[in-house]
Length: 281
View 1: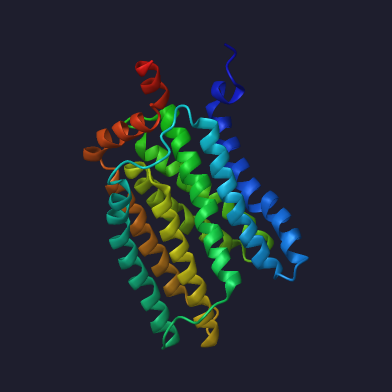
View 2: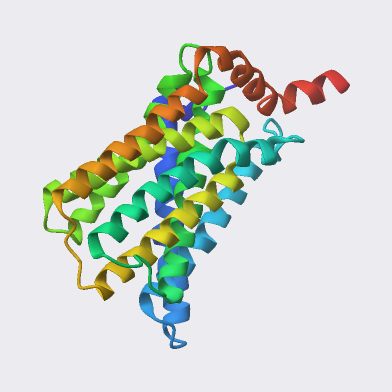
C-alpha cells in the first residue's frame, strides 16, 4: 500500500494539518460567513469572529471524520472533571494576580462591559486556537512521536507553533517589540494548555478556559480605556511575563516524569481504535 506523503514526512504533516486547519477556520470560512452576514447588517469584525467559530467546528469535524477509524475523540469517564481540576486553580490564581495589577494601575475596577464583537472574538480564539494547536497538533504528535522522553518536547512545539501565529499581529501593531512580547506570552500559555491536554486529552474544557481568559482580557482593555489608561507601565509588562512563565512552569510540572507513563497510556488508548476493532473481528 502506497504511503501517504504526510506519513512519510510527519513534520510536514504536522505543519500542514495544523496551519491548514487554522487558515480554513480563521480566514477561509470566516471570510465566507463574513460576506453572508455583513450583507445582512452585521458588524464586520463580529461577522469575522462568528465565522471563525463556525470554521473551527467544521475543521474539528473534518479532523474527526478523517481519523474516526483509529482515534478515540470522545473523552473517557473522568477526563472532563479531571481537566477542570488541573486547570481551574492555576487559572484562578493567574487571573487574580493579573487583573489585580490592572486595578492597582488604574486605581479602580479594571473591567467594563463589552459587546458581541468582543464576545465572538474571545470565543473564536478559544475554539480555533485550541482545536488547531491542541486537538490537531498535539494529537498528531502523540500518534507519531509519543514516548516518555518526548512528552515535554510535544508541549514545547505546540506552544511555539501557537505563539508564532501571533506574529501576524504585526499587520495591526507597528511596535515589533510588542508583537514579539505577545508571541512570548502565547508560547508560555500554549505550553500550559498543551500540558493539560496531554494529561487528559479533552479539548473542550481548555477551549472554555481560553475563551474565559480572552473575554476577561477584552473586559479589562475596555476598563483600562474607561480610566484613560491605555499604555501599561513597564513593571506591569514584566510582571505579566513572570506570572505567565509561572503557568508554563506549572505545565511542565503536570507532565513531570512521574506522570509520563500515564500520559503514554492515555494516548495509546486514544489512537487504538483500529487495533481494538481488528481484535474484535
